[in-house]
Image 1 (cartoon, helix red, strand yellow):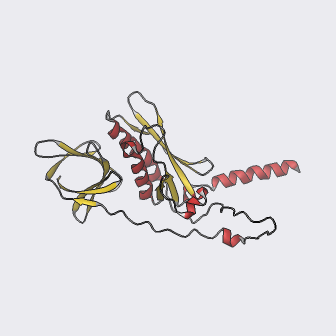
Image 2 (cartoon, rainbow, N blue to C red; image 1 turned 90 degrees about the vertical axis):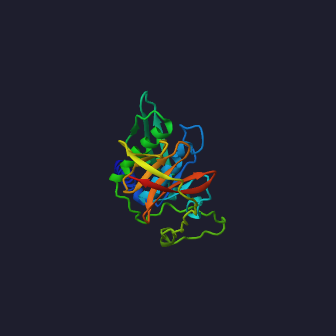
Image 3 (cartoon, rainbow, N blue to C red; image 1 turned 180 degrees about the vertical axis):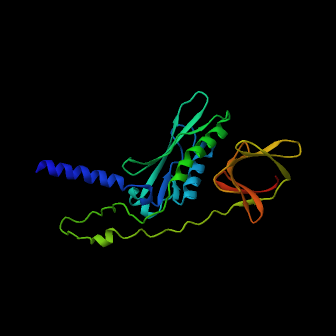
Length: 257
């Protein structure tokens, strides 16, 4: 009899683990600093990681932000994102992990690589390469809710909670878009093709902005040497958006390809 009970517990554990996929989660918590870096959001990697998860369809928050009640009351309702670095002599190697609240790995990306010499460019390209693993995963939140937070009850008052209440879907919290400070274009930039995208130069000529291709058309990871962000086309106009001193800046671009 004990043998059958043991087998039942083993198969139950395996079944529960197999069902734990990224589709069970709507939220992802991104750290404000990865362990292998010295500063918060260094090279804007944390911002880029959050952006990539939102592009995939998740609702992402930084771990230093005011979290909604669904996560603050029960961290098991969210995945935790982490990025690991593997030391390489001539390459930057990054791997993206998505873990549940118990530290179990729900998703592990391939090892993203870059041979660029500049740290900001190399880390950005390696992270982007690692995130391409999510392109092979069809994410669709299935409405699953993790175990609800237990509310302590007085010892003299045992309260029975209906299963339907515990399993009720989490109410969606609307997320408003950030309002940027818009800056006008300073002059025409000319696009020169590179192996990973484009570099934009002015009439000096001086390189002003580097654009790295993404899986989306007219959507680039951008680096101007001091700030990392995104460049995209909207209503026929190009914009470069990035954060400076915790403020979103949106610069218009005049690009000739």
